[in-house]
Length: 262
Image (cartoon, rainbow, N blue to C red; front, side):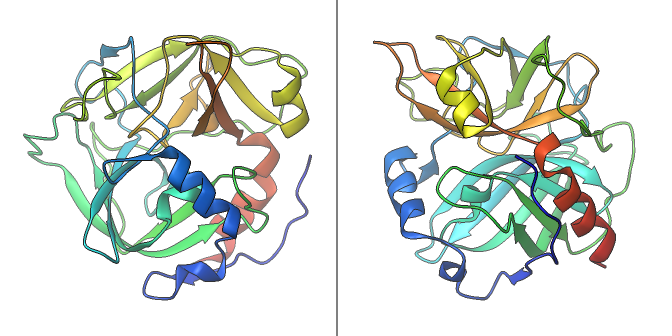
């Protein structure tokens, strides 16, 4: 499904975010939330990456109306735009993007930049088009540890291969703590009838993203971002199904936001 380009919908962070949040989103958050964190991203069965080898990674720190701090993943598109999942902004009144980070306890030289505007996909609803662009208040300083990632620009007839997901989410399903260091896990995309109907990339198994990694990139063989970590759906017993919003299908909307917003 290709989305017709439209003028980007700008939502100031101090505005009432419920203007673009449908009732279904509340169901999603209740289902996917745990201990104040947005559920969709724990790197289970993964490994710690070489420090700063994924310089496009962004840790988003969001504060809700009731004072709770939650985290999501994100990735740098340009010097002042970050991509994440649309549901990450639910009930949040402020957001900071931490760039150039590897170890959360030792954020030396990391860049902490506030987010001033958010652009949820104009057709965002429940987990459909679960993608959002964030405008930073100032431009990032590119360096060895802070660089943007290229995005896939068209959807191939065949599934992308050699894919991985990166984030600071949990590393143990029974833990209540997120990872201190950046982790990564390889995932294999599958042809699933439900995924095809809903036009998402999917992977399944006991390794993959869950709580804390929402909004992180699905990066595949050519080093480009193909998807955004969205949510998990139950599969066969103890075999979760991981869903990723397709970036190629939203490229016209993405490019218009990046081009038109100053």
